[in-house]
Structures are given as C-alpha cells and as structure tokens.
Length: 423
Image (cartoon, rainbow, N blue to C red; front, side, top):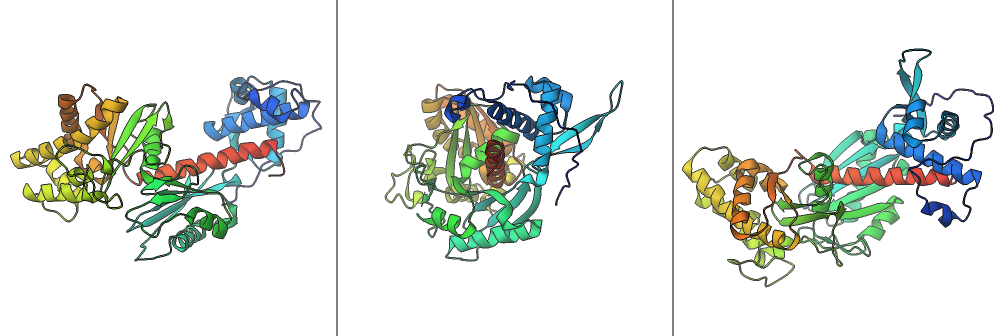
C-alpha cells in the first residue's frame, strides 16, 4: 500500500518571503511566543497547504497559490518541504492552454492510517482507512459471549490491520462506537446495558495494550456525524438523529457541534418519561419503563404482531408494512408513528431542531412512510414543525461515523507534525 514519492531535484531556493497564508489562525502566533519569525511563517504556510490538499484532493501549484493567497515561489518551497517529509507527492499533470502541463499534487494516502470500530452485543465490526478516508480493509467478528471487551477489540483491530497489510504500529487513531453513556471527562463507558462487561477503565486498558490514541464515542453520536457528512443532514448545523432499534437513542447537533451533556447522558431517550408508559423502576434496564417501553424494539415487535406483521426481526416487520398497500399496514404504521411522535415532540418542544432524522434499523425500514406519519403526529401535539426524514446513510452509520472521526484526528495530527518535525 506504499505510494512512492515523486520528488524532483531542484536548485537551492531563494530565501522565502515573509508572507502568511490566510487559513492560519492568528492566535497561534502569540501562543508560540515567536510572532513573525521566518520559521513560524514557514510552518503556518506548510500547514495551510497541507490542510488544503487534505480536503481538496489534487491541486496544482497555481491553485494552491490562489486558494491560500501565497505566492507561487513560496508555494513551490512549501511543496518541496512537504514532499521531503513524505506527506505530498506529484500524482499527475493538468493540461494547460499554453506552456508545459502543470504538476498535480496530492496528499500521500499512506502518510497515515486509522481504524474505526463498532461494538455491540452481537457484532463487532472494524475498518482500516488511509488518511484520505479510503477504506483498505473491513472485518466483522462474532463476540460469541466474549467476556473481555478489551481483548475482543484488540483481536479485531489486529485482524483488520492484517487484512489491510498495515502494521498496527502505523495506526494514527482508533475511534470506537459504543452504545450507552460515555463519560465526557474520562472517555470511559459508564452505562452500556447491552454490554455489561464494557466498564470503567476500558479506555486506559485499550490504550495500554494497543499503544495508540483511542477514543470511545456514543454510537448514535457517531451515526449523526455520518448523517451530516453524507446522509439526510448534509449541511445542517441543527438537527437530531432519532435512533430506533433494539434500544432508543438520540444525537443532538446544535450549531454544528454534538451536545453530549455534563455526564454524557444527553440522548438517552429510552429513559424519557412519557404519557402512556410506566416510570422506570431500574435505570440499568431501560425496558422497565419510559419511552423505551413504548417505542423500543420489543414494544414495536409486539405492536407488529398484533397487526399481523410477524417477522424474524422488528425491522423486517416494519419494512413489510411500509411496502404493503393495505389497510392493516397503514393502521400499524399509524400506531407506530403516534408512539414515536410522543418522543419526537418531547424533544422538539425543548430544542426545536428543524430537522429530525429517523435512523437505526427501524427508522431505515420505515422510510418515508413512517417519517411522514411521525411529522404529522408531531405537528398535532407540538408547536414546533420539524421536517422528519428517514436516514440517508444506507448502512454502517456508526462505523462510518467512527471512520470520519478517526480520519479527522489523523489529519489534525499530521498538521501538528508539520509544526513539530519531531512528532
């Protein structure tokens, strides 16, 4: 998977002008205590060009100069330094109207690798990608009752790296999607009902056995990242992802930032006290009451059975109803939508997000047939009028979000390494 650099010999360049690319943050100047020095300006220009290439694909020297506002001479010196460090390479040519073709530069994909992992009670899936976000390997593992989640994660990541032909030591970041509450202070899982062995101390243990930066994130939050990047919430700064599966969850994006709450419990909507459902008697078992007992997986399946839509899974029952033009199918979806609308309305009267995405296996299975009914149900009991749509991420939303987060971390580390050659 190595990509050989295509460096070109060149004469010693003239002294680099003291000019600064606009993308750099002015606060960094004061923070480093050496404002305006040539070395600092070089670092900031290098970071600006690398950041542009990380997000912009293939660019010519002239394009980089245009986008950063830095002269072509300075850009040439920047690219030479980045090539020497193995971060950038010439990958082709762009034909012009006159003169020789312009060299196209791109980030070297193998300059960093990352891994993402989704952990649930019945499946562990992982993927490895290069710094461009291109996946190079994927694996799935049946936990089969494993009682040591740290060892399970280690084995899965090692298997994914072996499949990718990438040494584990080359991973720059690992992001794990996990159900339940994640402590925002420690990063440890605190309450994962379906994963009782997934406990406090797991994060330090993983970092110890993998010797890598590891982040554990709530699974629905990661799914929301995927939804915003390439799903039904592209470009939306304010929306909620309403997760409907075996359990219920909520991810809240406000002003383009995820809201996790002081204890990391924001979005544990299965515990929401709602009319028509008993209050919780045991917070470690959400099905004992609250919204989970009204619209969780077991409740939806029982509702489907009563309407004659028995199936192997809850999602299959909902999908069958959503695609059946019958009165019984319509009645089932109406009943389900009214239940879901109670929870959605409770969120909307507080947040008024404007956009509600129905995700999880049930939200995906219900499609627009369920989403339109939920929107009507919310409008009947709530002053907010959100747009309600089904998920736009076809599969693996949590793993996709984990990969996005890991790639972002790797890119941040690469940019930092430009300013600190020792990293």
